[in-house]
Image 1 (cartoon, rainbow, N blue to C red):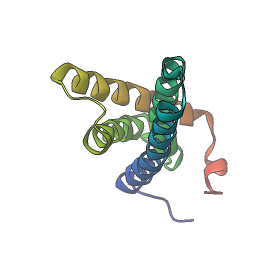
Image 2: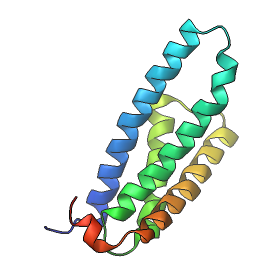
Image 3: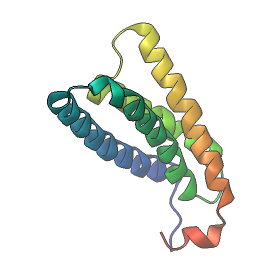
Length: 125
């Protein structure tokens, strides 16, 4: 199997993040319109959104042989930028900064988690 380069891994990761974040947005809109206690679900929805940043960094890291953490950082940052631009996650400067930093850090954690898997596992991808 041909090895992907860094750009391809980040783009695949960002595309996966966008699709899953869109599904999360659909689910949250459904809950907001059809639930009396939407506030109860907010903590879980935020948790799932943060897990998506980790998943984006993990997918980018697992697709590569080297530079897994750095590519995970970039994938998390690209995921955060896409969440801000496409879904309007943050509107003021501090919210944008916090989203970018959390995407960067959580993407790096996901890239670091991909170090736990050996290369022979990624040949199946």
